[in-house]
Image (tube, rainbow, N blue to C red):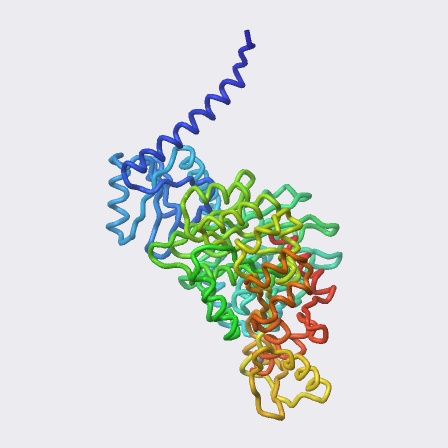
Length: 575
Ligand SMILES: [Zn+2]
């Protein structure tokens, strides 16, 4: 007789009960005509969860898990529970537009766990560790340049110590918001704390703060982000949200240990800044037409390529927006969810929800359009290709240096090269260039060398734009409007390959880059260098800035080793 093992059986039993309950809820949801949801694969918006108190949520066996202005998504266990009915009615009475989902108790327990974070955040907000958002809002109005921020840091040296830490924190955020920084870097060094902001993709030194502020500043920031204070030798992640003048600023913080202490990077996500539309991508007309056509197709894979920080996700978000229409179901699997998009189910990878397992789960939800954050292993590659071949439009990214590099990369990952032609529709390559500040850019006539370079690049352009001679291009100068950087905002420079019969045949015959490029040439899509030169001639960016990211002489994009190292260090920081 087999030995009876209690622990084993208890675990098994719980697992069975769990599966049984999920199955039951799924079946009931179908009967009630309500959508089923598993909250464990979904980013739970802490602001949404707060809509109902913990007490009401638990009493009503429910949780508010998504919230966009007055639109909320509520997961409930039983639509007939009187507490649930009351709470839903109360939400509607408050003007909320409610979408309900059915979910299991395990999902609810998982979501209710987030109230612990809430209790913590509230304690921080109301206690001695408050950050004063009114003060941040006030400072945001006064800071126009990095110098103003540095000056304020210097002026507050005389404040008493408790107030000084608060003021330092507030100035840290106010400065970043006022200057439009995407990230705040705090790096301890022997004699000080180096504070840097990332502005339009480039790190700028703001000030070196005194080292004696470090411990207290770090403790406060770690508390805010929900990190564990006394862990100092491990990487930690956290997040928090604050509201200034009706705008939610979400902060994703990450800490890594170092020789001189922990360094912290905080990424600021301002949901109102992001308006993802095709028009904001800065596509040239040829490519705009190609992409618009491709997005109308019902199935196939569209891949964007480029290094970290080249705007791949932004492009995919714009594509999602473009395909988003009533009756089209869109699901994303991201790592992490960077921006919340209205009406799109966004899920986030975790330990037990990987890109591969997530993609398989998502396919069972019968979506029309799927975005999977990154293809980085064979399993994801094969599942994505399979999805693309079975009636889904699939968006993803590949970490390759060029669009054409996607083909050998997919084959390296184990994709059958004969499958590529029938599944991949389009591969896009991109880099970001900084956009010249309209207030201070300076027109000039290119010198002979620059003129020759521009002509050389344009000579191969499939549909070269015409410009008056002598040519006028622009240099970055710097003024108050652009934090004295000469640039404001960033835009992509692009290249793309459509997978048509010629490209498909080339990939099957010999997928080496120059062979595939040659096969794609008749498509007439400008190269990255050609696209970039157009942007220089239109006064969008400077020649120097373009050369920073694209090697014009080669006609290929390259990155300086420093820029690449900077990106890698940054990628390692921000998960
Ligand atoms: Zn300017």
